[in-house]
Image (cartoon, rainbow, N blue to C red; front, side, top):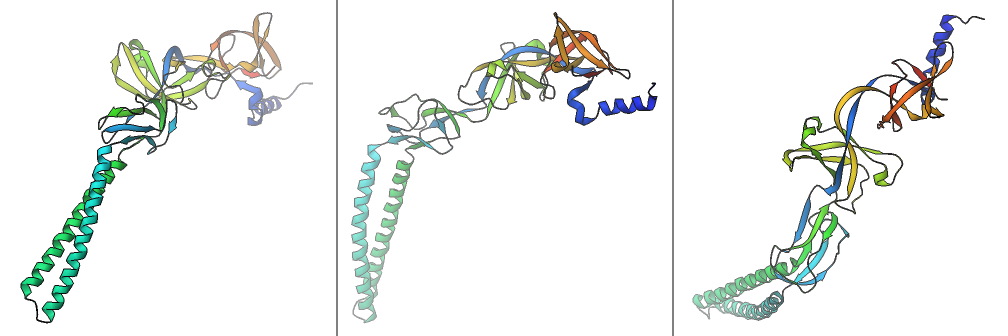
Length: 329
């Protein structure tokens, strides 16, 4: 029985319904990147030092290499015995001034009472009031000096300037340090892949380009993809430096080397899912559907070209043309 043409058209439309998209694939040439393998390193965008604010002796270290720290966390404590001696001296001075203020307050109250009764002259009252003001101002000055010394003692705590991983702690307890000396090197939490691409490929490298990280480098079965965030304008040792963002890099092994694939130009190619290919006796076949039925067609397989939307994509060099509709075997 002959099937009407309208029925064949409806069958073809049904075969491409989204619900069956995983079982059918329409061949369309698309631009692909000629990719080049380069090595990149896992690095922090910035490595910042945790510096001392006062000079003294390292009294305690709170972190070691590899520890994770939060911003503002105490990483070391610097002790200075001179500050403790100054603090004790000021405490003694403040205690003496408190006694002087109490006596000056008593003298002022007595002078005011005698002046009000007309027994003491006004000059005596002015002298008592002046003595009280001098004692009060001296007390405030010593209290302010004590606050300064107390703040210096507080600044003996070396704080982490940013959250991240401690890379290096070059000091030990008992080391004498000066103000501004680094106690620890901290890699900030934002980790990137830093690529160094040969200079001849500089024209193909742009911010926003996609990169692919080998799955084997991360111990996974599916490759990871990322995007180039920044291309540095300066060439170092004949190489262009660029930063790429990739999810799940981890932040423990800084400067770890991984192999990535970057674009080195574009061309049109046919890319299909590998799941549509069957191999028999060393020959690769795909199943092509048309209005009459299905046909197995031999193809010449190229290299793997995975994409974020096609993780198992492979290039087909010959055997297919634009518009062919593939079905899973």
